[in-house]
Image 1 (cartoon, rainbow, N blue to C red):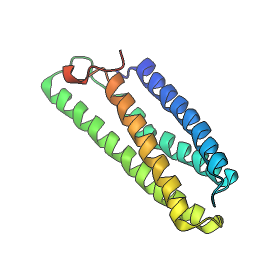
Image 2 (cartoon, rainbow, N blue to C red; image 1 turned 30 degrees about the horizontal axis):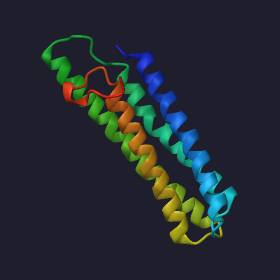
Image 3 (cartoon, one colour; image 1 turned 90 degrees about the horizontal axis):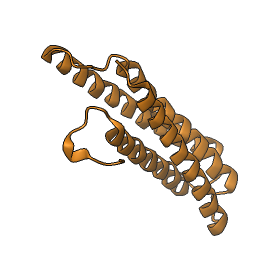
Length: 149
């Protein structure tokens, strides 16, 4: 059974971290006012958030079959299902980030190095946030992952 409150809380925390990241990135772009404009930074931030949320969707699909104390065979299938869903989510994030970079490189006049830095920065930031919240909020975590309490 899916722990919907846990998943909703995880999505809410990731979106909160994304909004905070948007504010910080726009402030950094405004302060340094380099070759990357505020519109470009905001567009990259918004599209990166979309890629991040899309990367969480496969987990929500497979997570609906989470375990509630079943047999060992079901436990293995459940763990494998979560691993596969997490892997598919990461692939969506990687492909989406590459597509975002190519889209930005085609439509924005900013240098490739600056675009790559912003897009890669968002990828790393959102991936770290998602993985950290996933580990902290998972109901099936090991005792050594005792965080976010």
